[in-house]
Image (cartoon, rainbow, N blue to C red; front, side):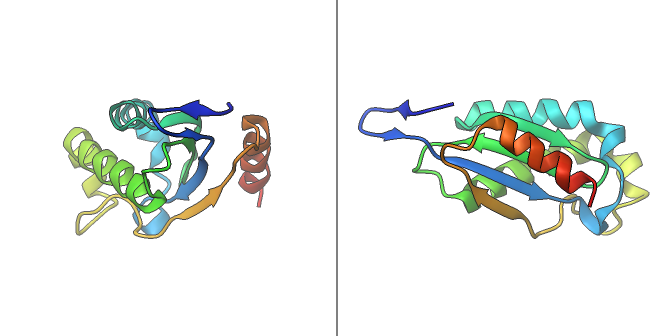
Length: 132
């Protein structure tokens, strides 16, 4: 981690996002590998650097770095919408059992900023919140 550079910017902007599937169903373990691959594809495509990704049974922790031109709301909207669409395309029969009425993710999410916080610190936070 550390400063990154673009044409006219030197930055170190890191976000910690957390969100849940609809109704907080414990379904993510069944689709974790595909979901992780899609997270990585989306972040690569949009220029977001994944620093840490943890997929639990009923929520996701995503710690990433992004250029300051990207608002946190834009980042989370992009990642959630594309992963939701891809999950429905791949797992529609499975998801229909749990997510009646469509949708995949809850609308709400948590975002925190972390400038110089290490990935280890975020991992410790994840472990601590998993036991709450």
